[in-house]
Length: 346
Image (cartoon, rainbow, N blue to C red; front, side, top):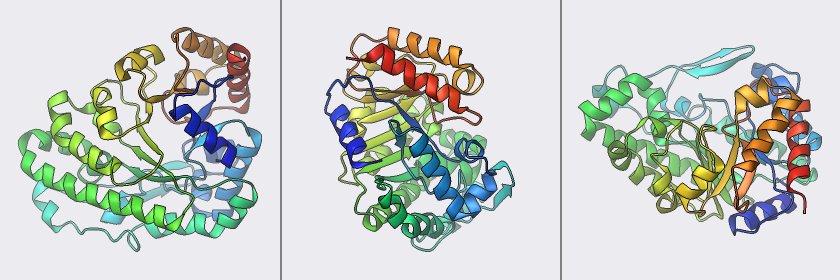
């Protein structure tokens, strides 16, 4: 984000009602490579192509707030690789991290990662370091320290089904497991912030949170998310969980979240009421059915319907309910932006 865009984001978090409403999208490897006409593997393996893809996005849509911005990542392999996961790559497929734990009894033997040296983390840090001068020459800055959340990482290390079963059958062991992962996440976020002084935000993604009932959420998610979000003194604390459900919503303020991206199956008005208008909402057009598979006309109508659900447009950044999905064409993003400008102008 540019300095001007960062100030816009801070103004929204403070509750200023901007006109026209700002638009923001989470962009990363599911959408950006193919949109930039390169393969997913080239995006990961060629730092220059990674940079050029991100530059193309910010120059094509200069008014959009892109989250987190110049995201150096290797998909779902990013954090699990530090724990020793075998990472599987395809030329134009999303990378996948195979589980490393065959049973819960293997947890004590799992190494505690060194965030400076292990897995793909050194590559994630090195890429924006190498391109920092070029990024800043374009008026952009690295603004966010980013990580997947503790339940998300645990589900890759164990396998999602085994992890969810173990929550019920061996809660003590899982609690200790999540504590270890949370400590790793805090170290990883701190390392990013220490490396890039321009960072004043944190971005945590954890869709597994949405699979829990309230009791399990309060036991296995709330304490760890709260500790992580309070571990960095930054202005923007952004949480992504686009699994349908409201289990985390009553606790977002306690956790420390002030910016939230959620499932498109919940309207902005529903979420405004649930958060008591205390959290900035990023959403909430359907990502796949509308943004990727729809026409510009479909996008226009969906944006209109999304705006029609809300009475108070403060603390809203218009987006899709989740990250930008694969296959979203430029014409649909243009239709989105033009509709927001037309419907929310001063």
